[in-house]
Length: 226
Ligand code: NI
Ligand code: MN
Image: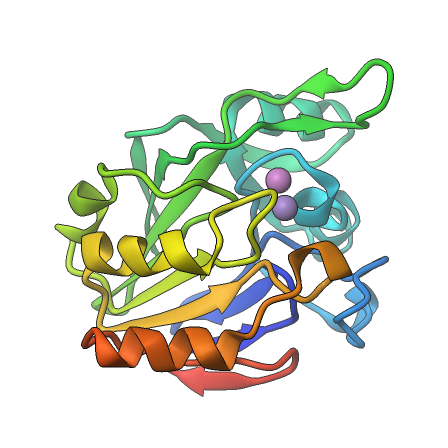
């Protein structure tokens, strides 16, 4: 399978049977030069409600006739707006034609249309995707937590983990996450999009390397074969 990064927490995962976009954030993403109109997919996976993860989900799902996979509240929200959806909740997995998706815990918040009356969008989640004999974990937005050890028990080929700090774990805690997840390879995300989450991903990768963890820093537009 092929993994492409669009900046922030936005990825395309091309399996042998389907194209999955995770946390689509093209419109208004300062680190992404790809337009949402250039993307085609079969599924849109959304970790939580915040617009920097769900912003382009509806437009993408409608244009591509793709299914949105997310927690129950987010799925219902997009169903009401005319999208095809599949609702789940943490701990639950489902086998789709391309493989299996399991929602995991994440420690964060989840709302949409924030402001005076934000809509509560259920609990934030991480995504464990199993396809083509590979396991990919997208942590969503989260703090580090000890139960990441359980997620790591699946045997992770790639872990996508936030390092931006302020809204999610920062580099120090992300190093702990690497210890818990024991992924063959980790990719940092959710950093450098705005000054408040500016981080030196290269320095993080070097520190991780001294701890025996392989970290691949991807620039927006980069892709590689998992
Ligand atoms: Ni968030
Ligand atoms: Mn976020």
